[in-house]
Length: 87
Image 1 (cartoon, one colour):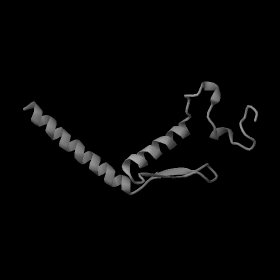
Image 2 (cartoon, helix red, strand yellow):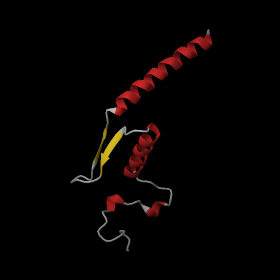
Image 3 (cartoon, one colour):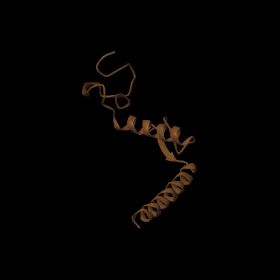
Image 4 (cartoon, helix red, strand yellow):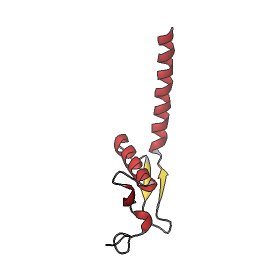
């Protein structure tokens, strides 16, 4: 294994080790965020593929519509509660 990583590895698919052990590239960060959102929601909010000519894609699922609606409903109730606290 040389400077470029394992034989056949695409250079865009690896961490930049020269920047230190805590550096994470943008793609890896997006994948981690999507996986955590799905895990915390208990269902898939973001779906993704890792193959294809361009390396894969991600898209939002119909379950995310319900999550967004629920979020804004809770935000509205919180705003009302804040107004009541000021009175």
